[in-house]
Image (tube, rainbow, N blue to C red; front, side):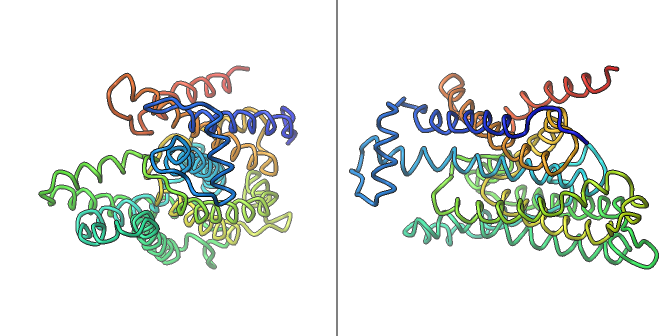
Length: 358
């Protein structure tokens, strides 16, 4: 499985695009700010100096910079999880939300917004608590979904039993879909039952994916989970390559498919929960990026995983920038899912068409 283009050169180019996108995200907005203010905000913020209220630097540091940085982390995580999940279930149509954790995170956040209005109101006095409370609720919901999918799949012999020593990807998919549908139904029920329009609007907007509420406290946690998960997945890269050859071949070369699938399932589920907790369910990134990565560098996971992380980070940062630019035209900021679908669907079809050409 040879790389089609230089992985190092591609990552270097993507890093330049990524840094340009972060700079654009800090400069462009309702009011465009000079790039010099970005450098000054970075200097003052990193050195611990006080930022003057109402200054351009405080707007950049507290509002504009966290957003593209969080977008980069979320995009990288979705790219990694997309590659791993498609290898896990051997299905090119799989995405990070296939296994139910996204629906669990959505239910957790919905419960907080519908029932925890008073908790959010009292938490506004603490920026750290207010910014992390919805993320914590979403992660707990994702963790509950993970446990249910794990129990269902294990009970049905989907991981590693005497009857199915290599594991059964189909059982895992069906368990994830079933739990996801159950949690989605509960979310819809709660949204319909609430009589507060503002809460309903907040839930629906969050479900469509948004980075508008990005804050600095969210970044270290999400970054830590993404980095740790990425390191574990990279360590499993050779075993994921073996799974591409089929379970029998993998067993012949000393790779146990059941244990690999169990590890990948746990890692990707926790990563998805952490990502959805801070951004909502952003679609198409986890589906498109693995296909784009394979088109560029081939199917070797030792190259595909880092490339997909860089591609996902770069794509989501620039999509978020375009969402804010479009807001000046349409009068309100577009949910990220709108642009990821508009941009991702044609690109995915183009990749599939190119792949079918002899």
